[in-house]
Length: 236
Image 1 (cartoon, rainbow, N blue to C red):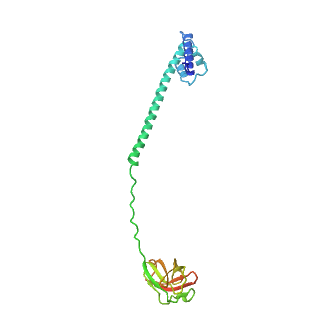
Image 2 (cartoon, rainbow, N blue to C red):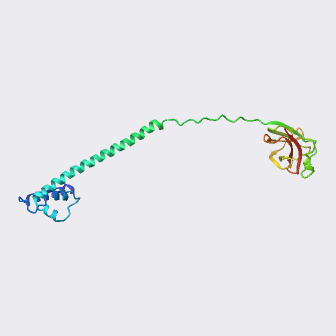
Image 3 (spheres, rainbow, N blue to C red):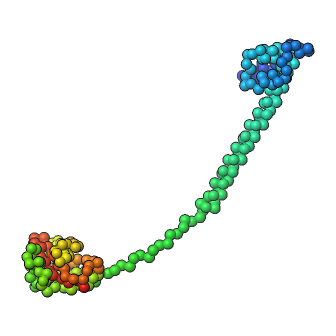
């Protein structure tokens, strides 16, 4: 099986090392710089072409020390890498374990159920029938809209569904109905479509009168083809 480039490189390195260890005996240790210098050279990432390295690679005893130091450093480096890997693995395991524990103890809990308020009670409007079939209305701008006349209806301060019976001959369609104060200022307004039954044209509109002050008011009615007509009402 052919050797890989790495194997060939290792074999060449080994041959060169053996040659240095064999071919440069220096029993008298002439020119040797001491073990500390050899250790410093061994700690380098790669040898620097300086006087120390030039001596070491031509002195078998110093080169032996150099190889011994390199072996010790390589072993220490491997232990450090292995220890770092173990620490990293333990850290990852701890993080994953904590995440799993958090999910199992907190994530599985059901979200708190918010207390639900009971639905607000539905207030049905009180029906108030207002018959203006035979009443004469006052046009806007005439005599304070008839507010000095007798009220056509007296209505309690509450939510009221007004059933208006319109004068005979009133047009069918969409009407606008307003509540005005004594100064004829609109307070609230609603739109509604007419219905026709038993020869009577009528409207149904709902007003919340609960915030009004008891007193005299004006009911304004405007048809699709007519001007505003006003009728006095009382709120109590």
